[in-house]
Amino acid sequence: MYCQKCGSEIPAGEARCPCCGALRDGLKFCQHCGDAIDKECIVCPKCGKQVSDLKGTQPQVVINNANNNTNVNRNTAYSYSRRPGAEKNKWVAFFLCLFLGIFGAHKFYEGKIGMGIVYLFTVGLFGIGLIIDFILILLKPTIYFV
Image (cartoon, rainbow, N blue to C red):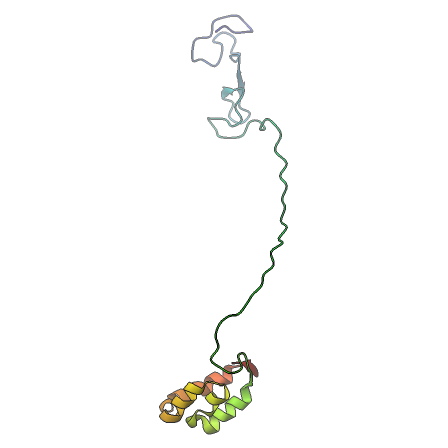
């Protein structure tokens, strides 16, 4: 290959003319590191920086976020109580636990018949369950659902 400026021969594998220093045809300088790179390069192979913009136009992206789903929730869980989600008062349960807790009256009030019978026959789970329920009832909101 011959130099376009001075006409001297450029040895194979060389990027510049040995006589005048002109770049071989099809090369350009990297604007960041100054190395000779191919004219078609977008990213410099030596320094890794972008030297030119991508050719061609970018496709127009249309984002369609239309959500036409309709959510229908059906609660099919079986409930053992007669009134699922029954509204109870904290203070009624508190005083039942305080005065009749060893008989499980607060459990019967909440609709927990099985636990009420256990409390009835074990004297409030030997007093330990009564103390735990006493604390738990105080931590509940004034109106709660069972």
